[in-house]
Amino acid sequence: MPSITLSNSPSGPIVIVWVGPSVPLQQALKVAGAAVPPAIQGSFLVDTGASLTAVDPRLIQPLGLSATGTVLCPTPSTAGTAVPMFQYDLMVYVPGAGVGNGWFVEAIPVMASSFAGQNIDGFIGRDILDRGLLVYNGSSGHFTLAY
Image (cartoon, rainbow, N blue to C red; front, side, top):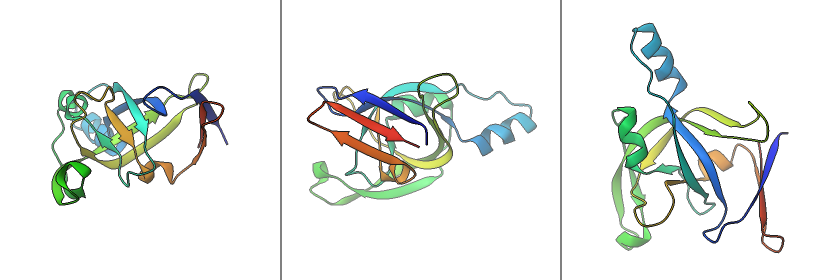
């Protein structure tokens, strides 16, 4: 099982993530002769408290994607009241050590949520973490993602 081990940042376990149109959408665009928007890089917090992966609209907007629906999300800032959030089908890639040795998720519904002022562009939730292994070693200041 491939893995990456990174140092914790002052903000917690942060990984570089590339997001783009889902692979099925990329294939449909190619068949239609349309351009496939390039993936966009961001910094994401690994968040075991989040059931879904979330991406800042600043990363989604340049992809030119339409929302595939909405999902109700209770948040601390809304006192636990569920609010509708737009949902998008994306490809998610966490680069690993060496070329082509990363964690690749071809298609997953993510919710759009603003992370303005938080020094991150999104978070990786349990919908992705459930597909791998996370070891958080606070005493050593490292975390490992295996996939």
